[in-house]
Length: 435
Image 1: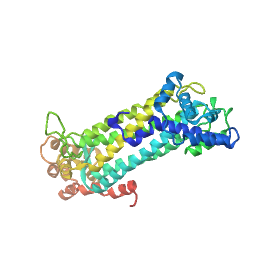
Image 2: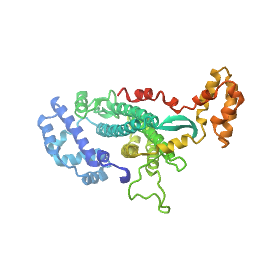
Image 3: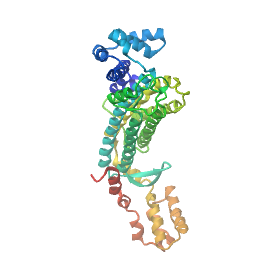
Image 4: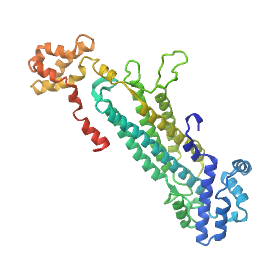
């Protein structure tokens, strides 16, 4: 985790103290269940809670023990015994390290998912507000980066809203899939621990029992979780790139908010650069980069190995922390985005009416002209305009072959900008609902 791109609430999920508290809760809830089953004394389970529930675990002491034992869970259990006393002998009975590690990881991922879902909600709110604000603001639609036909800026934002609505649904599904618990013992057979202990711990930790854990929780669950984060990162990059393009000097239809005292360049005082969306683009690349090791972690040896462990210790915190930061940054960009409707209209008119070429094409075919001939007529008049030799409407009215099919009034009718926006309300209802 890089402090520059880290928000405190998400970072706290991955701090050692948080991890050890979760480990303790897993062990203590398991002790409760074993006490109810008569496996350990009930007084022992109560003592475990009483002695360590509010304890601050000594991270340095645990690290010190681990340097000798070369085993993180044993180091923790040794330190826990120092806090609890003799009753600590009843901790971890019949359990294995993965029971603690995997269940803890899934607790952390569900908590991280809750934050990310809230982040997406924040972004959705900003997108909806700005989409409604610019619902009918005309702008040019581009294909291949080239002027195509008119759209509205609200439609651009509505598209992003729909995409991030899907992102939220995927996050909710990914959270559900990864929210499982395994307390099944060595090689996952429950030979040394009753399955009812797992059920109790799962309920207490807000998880569901893993149907079969083979000692580790299957990593296809985690692969899907991080793949979901990668898809969300790609959606963020798509929107960020759109804004970066719109802020180009030659376009300047929208730009990031430039605050008082902000400076864009150490050399050129006039610069106003899209630094936030460029930053989001870079962070999106990092989140996607963590998808590959998550996918590769699915293939473990037999019932268990730990080739996944080192990778997860890195990309678990990094991917969630980075996406959390980037989502919040993007929500802020959209919320404060500066929009220039006049420049949008100026750019829309830049090609002298060529954006209406399809309407002329269709009008000609409806008057009996073949599509092939109609295309040639329209393109014949469009290419001079492309070269800056006149405007489209005037050339069409002067073309005798076009006039065989269309009157001046019928030609001019095809240049109605509002024609392109007649279904905007329908699209908005599909995206945002009747409200």
